[in-house]
Amino acid sequence: MAARVRVYLETGSKRVFASAADWPGWSRGGKNEALALETLATYAARYAPVARLAGLTFDARATEFDVVERMPGGASTDYGVPGTPARDEAGAPTAAQLKRMRSLLEAAWKYLDRARASAPATLRKGPRGGGRDREPIYDHVLGAEVEYAKRIGLRLEQPPGGDAKAVNAFRKAILEGFHTSSPATKWPLAYFARRAAWHVLDHAWEIEDRIP
Image 1: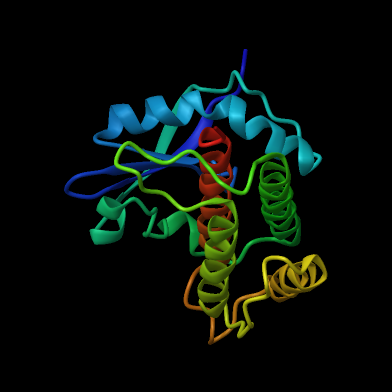
Image 2: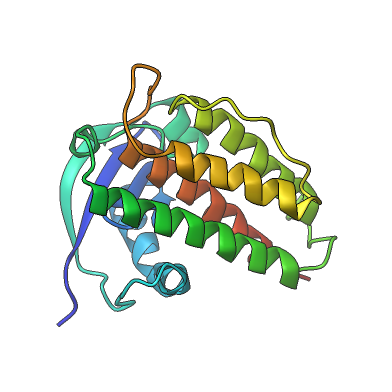
């Protein structure tokens, strides 16, 4: 029998986010709790390769959920962003937990890079002709990470998306700085990992879904 998955639910006025508490990046939204959990379950198979890249055992059949915390959401939630830390994330992670979080964030980056490498520069447009192409999506992810890094006390410059060496150095700086809380840490480290990995994978899956 597959193990049950601990889940946080963040509820706004129009949208709910379900996030796997122990698997940063496995977060999906829906119009209500049931739909958010249903969507989270359908993405287990898509998340499994990320866990493998991190060297972790992940059962893609593990779609039985235990809701361990409910948080009130806000405008960010309704916009489509898991924007509220859980109380469960407030404590200082152990060294083993930090190592696991870093491994999964790094795996999300690898997954994004693979999605980028397999996609054409021009992606299929949305129903009204909208949507960024591949490189603007990649640059958007890097830009968001500059802002996320500030929430854990890191001041970094956004690297050019086309400069793999600079991108790798940027990511290394995040991983090295993501080790302990300090007065400059505005986000709990566990929430940082969850939010950053979600954003990376959300756009990696968008690239995959919009390949012509």
